[in-house]
Image 1 (cartoon, rainbow, N blue to C red):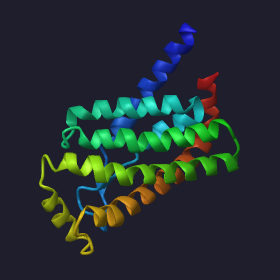
Image 2: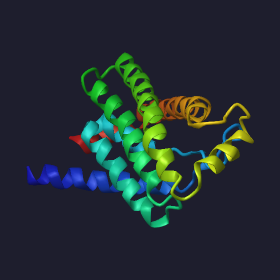
Image 3: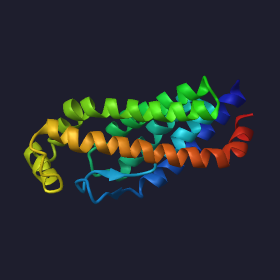
Length: 195
């Protein structure tokens, strides 16, 4: 049991460090406000969740966001959002895949993870994340900046509808496709780590 625990901790540490490095290479998308950035840091956690289970994937989400606090420019708000939203995707997909380790199971897991992430992101942004961000920048300024890219945005609800909803669907789809392709290639090596 001690060796199993030590190995699992080492795996969490390595995957978290990899995710933290990937997290540094986020980028803005031309059709979203500049503070909405896409990154691929969920990939290591999602691949680990498929290989070692959802708890391992969620732990990687927590550790990599804790590491990112040292270079954060969001006062921890972005990291909190990433833990909850990314953890929802990773946990959901990992749980479903653990009970159906087939190609169809992987597809269902990734689809469910994307849907769960998007459904959690909308109320979380409305009730928690945007109000916390407004401590650093007034909500009117956030909405005005967003309206420059999407004129239909004029309040929190339209922000959720035109930014949060499509962004999380796009991010979930992008991460899902990327993890699908990577997991298939890495599967032999990952299964050796598991044994």
